[in-house]
Length: 394
Image (cartoon, rainbow, N blue to C red):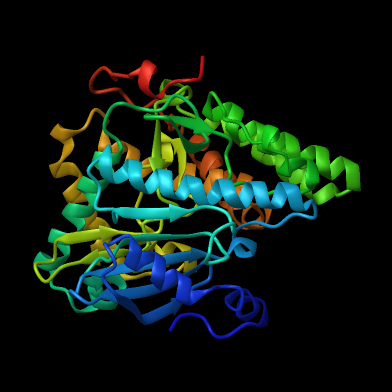
């Protein structure tokens, strides 16, 4: 199952000792025998379902490091690949244990290739249920409302205090969760790969402008006029979209996306699992409360869709129903997130930026012509920030 065979991935598969994978799983459960019952060969991970003799089921998850990050400097490459794997484990554990999100429990993890299996891997809880993308087309409105209400609650759980004070990737230091360098970052040259050039960042402005500075520096180095002009046009837009009230935080841990293939629901239409914490990052509040991508396909394609409109209407209603459980003005953030996320993604990825820049410039021009002020989002309550738990390192 999964993506079609590819020589590079097949070669990586040959380095994995599956006999030892099964033996290690068995040893972690007092010698109860187990076997691999199915596999899924994904873009970034290899997933194997294990069944024990007592019918307990686990998942063995093996990252494909060269799909997640590559560099010409092998030392930097292996360092970032290892950090990505550990950060994924940390983010998933934090979401489940500290925020109560339906992320799978991780039973054991083995970073690095220095183990009997020969590659990094982990064992985690197998989520039983249905992938949302497989069943959403057959759901009634009450079914959708149940799912979207749970999804909204998952977001609010992640956005509950204590908050983070920097933008970056999550790291664990003893029993403390802290902010480390941003691992999910598009590099343009080898200097960008250096871990010291990846933050963490103390404000939204620093986060966005640091990327634009890197892109313009690289553009000057290689004489890429288009990239330089693109970055400069984005730079002009940054002050328009940053809400100063949230420029210095709080910042929220978020999965890379809330894609329907990574959300599992039970027979009662309640969410029972949120998977795929690869590339999770601690990012701006202004892009956190957002419509999941399966609700915005018409925006991407530039088409009209009644089903997408209906998904967004229901999700807005579900978010609004939970307003009393959050410190933040949820609907305001939800509506503004489309534009801020477009800005953020366009800055981080210039190829996407080529398409999003004219849209953003037109939006700003229309707002100015109509004398519409994009007002700072009001804070409904004081924001309790536990600096001693998740603040900057002293």
